View 1 (cartoon, rainbow, N blue to C red):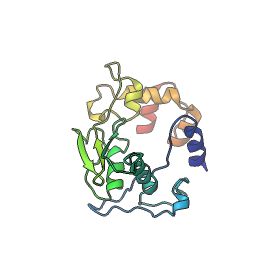
View 2 (spheres, one colour):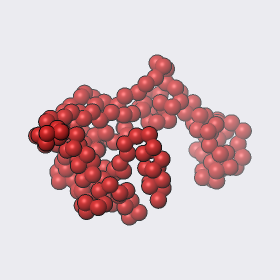
View 3 (cartoon, rainbow, N blue to C red):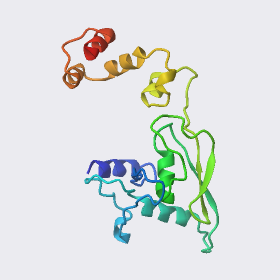
View 4 (cartoon, helix red, strand yellow):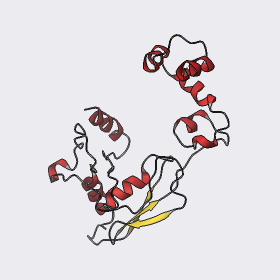
Length: 193
């Protein structure tokens, strides 16, 4: 019901579809959960854990409609898959293609160049490296969105300081099972102990 609430909210401003990429590690034949025609516009059932893709049939149906002219002929369309690094762009492509055609990883920067993948004769997906809009320096939002490899951070304490400022102190103390702390250095010392 949380997913349904988000979809209702987002549909006020954007065309919105619930989608969950396949998380299977096999190289081919990535699973897709089958949906009935009535369920294609509904929110996929995410109450039970699954490694299969959910929402692919609905998305493919929408893409096929975009590739069909008013006269009913099919034309080739290109669909760009864009977003922050490490958010699942390549996983979406693999799930729609039902094969491992785009490299995926759990660190930013796996996709180095733009690549084209044909889903069928009329639908071409363009996989792109992650896009980060930045002022040039590593601001907190970019770091916290996992858009920067941790190994490249000069100051690894700064992101922790940002998190401590944004989070409820009592909740952090409970989560990390640490006593009251005054600052970031003390917090890190207590966690490391």
